[in-house]
Image (cartoon, rainbow, N blue to C red; front, side):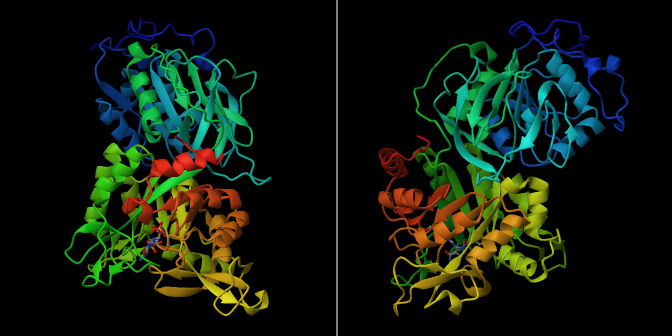
Length: 583
Ligand code: 1PR
């Protein structure tokens, strides 16, 4: 097809362009260092009139966009990757799932001429959907490691959420949006929860109010989506927002059907508490990768020839929990500490298969550390994590290695920047890095008897001890370390962790409820979200943990695997108790 000059018409099914009277391309200042020299007059918007099923994806290689790819393919569309600026201009539908840091993204876009092409494409009111950073980059500038200049298409500055008064940052989880204007693609999402994960946001103002199509409340009201004509961008992740998210993508891709309103009548009003299904995965004695579950971390069935408990197949179970309403699914490769995860191809395969059909966040942990294989080839933890992200993980979880890093940091007071935690959070953002803590209770008579932070326990110890500290362990609980869970949590927050998965070896698999003393201690010590884990045995345990602590999420394994309590029952119970959850 021949390229059309800028002034040519666009596909007939599109809305009229609202951009041209408002924006002057020359009013924008471009990065003078940008080596891309192609003159603007050589770039053309080449609008195909065909309603083909190809979606153009702008992936500038900064992170994981596999989830977006999977969602687009799931909806029956093919993907064409942008290789050069002209690919942007000839797109029928352009999806821009920004990932990574603002400055790095702008540098890449300016360097290869994509910034200019993007602005032209958007000014021509061609169908565009920006996701997360793909929304933020449209604004004037960002304070993230900045100020850094953005594409300057919309007035406003991207700033960080203010955590000084206790707000947990990153903003992670399912929150409600308030629709402020008809945007077509958001029809039906009023009153529903969608999935957010970010530390930076843009505030609505008089200057950008014509663009704003929805806002969201998290400590303050921020912009959750913008719309003008055929140009849309969302701060949340439709590709991770379950059926609601898929419906948004579907409406964007089928522009002709976007006017059909189908209003849902949800009641979402704020950030929901999350219910997470966890799959502890390992290879059993027959060599199959299975979902297993321990009692206080012992996963062998002692009554039955000491075999590893086999509770099902990872991909099938994850798919089932997604359908059942899990807000997230976590895979923990529990023998990753002794095996090399990149040698563990079945685990990567599990992630690839799961992410094709599961459209809520996936976390994977186990074995994330630097590693040298039998041939002397060194793999950095960043390479291991990258492989997990490429295979479909949205977040990675670090256990043992984070303990060693925190110990070193507390000993020296120096952030080397070289630990797995620091490197991965620098490259992928701290919202992508979870630290999994495996503590064990150590009872003491008085706080003076412990080197680490103690709590007055609700139930005294076996010898009547009234206090306990929580000793961190590594290698699946096999080795206790000289550091408490409180000290570890504070250290890893400083080192760049975005979330804490707080297990408790004493409670694991016992079904007697979460360790409220521990969860209260840690969730009050940090400003990042804390996931309460270990011990859930009944729906009441979930309401208890949310009422008595400030945990952001509760995770369970055994009760879901053994089908004792369905996820739906947990959510119904929480709603009855007045605790907001995604339904
Ligand atoms: O140290 O970076 O290789 O990570 C290993 C990961 O594997 C860590 O996240 C660690 O928690 C996990 N892990 C290691 N060994 C075990 C084990 O069980 N033997 N599982 C293990 C941890 C704890 C939970 C569990 C909850 C809920 N499992 O995540 O799912 O306790 O269970 P419940 O609801 O049945 O009580 P690295």
